[in-house]
Amino acid sequence: MSYTRPDHYTKKAKAQGYAARSVFKLAELEERTHAVPLRGKAIDLGCFPGSWSRWLIERGLQVVGVDLKAPELAGGQWIVGSVLEVDPAVLVEKSGGKVDILVSDMAPSTTGSRFTDHCRQIELARRALYYCGACLEPGGSFVVKVFDGEDAPTYQKEVEVLFKKVRRIKPDATRDRSVEFFLVATGFRGAP
Ligand SMILES: C[S@@+](CC[C@H](N)C(=O)[O-])C[C@H]1O[C@@H](n2cnc3c(N)ncnc32)[C@H](O)[C@@H]1O
Image (cartoon, rainbow, N blue to C red; front, top):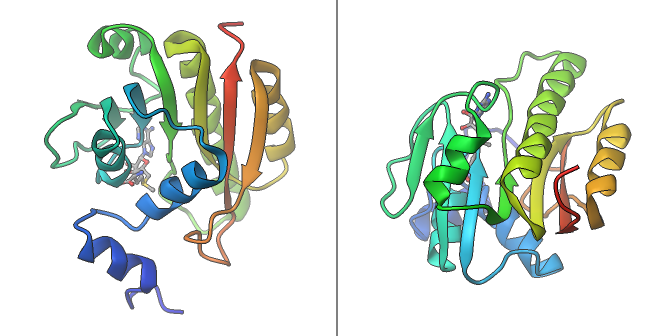
């Protein structure tokens, strides 16, 4: 299928007023794991254009998001910058304390080299895990996108050390040919 032709999920997102089809990935991950609380605080890493943040806000969560660009979305607080440079303490301060869930849909601009894209994406996923240590309440949840590749199993083990339960899921809204999958981790054991 051509990326220029809107698919079922793109049309559905547009019809429901969401900025991106990725919203259906988060909705399905929640449906399958019940990892997203109904209220409380959330951090959304890689929040632009804002469909995950909007979904979280509509669910009753208070959201602080970080991205290279700010979403045009009311109801949350946005930090424009790279997660590789933003101090997690800033997010805790903006959130008014540690949060109940941290989500990361971050992906680098792709280069066409599967290996390079995998390495750059795993760096972002590792940074998201580092943020958990600084920002997440014990018992909290973590949802993270991962580009599959040689470092993915090691990364999954790193997540498993910090959380009681970790599930690997490829949602329906992820295109078949995509290398992405998600880890949904619950029961944060606390900062290492
Ligand atoms: C797939 S999009 C996220 C879509 C979003 N979850 C939504 O539903 O609207 C991936 C995002 O990761 C962001 N990103 C990539 N590298 C980043 C970095 N170093 N720091 C912060 N965000 C980054 C990109 O700017 C992009 O907006």
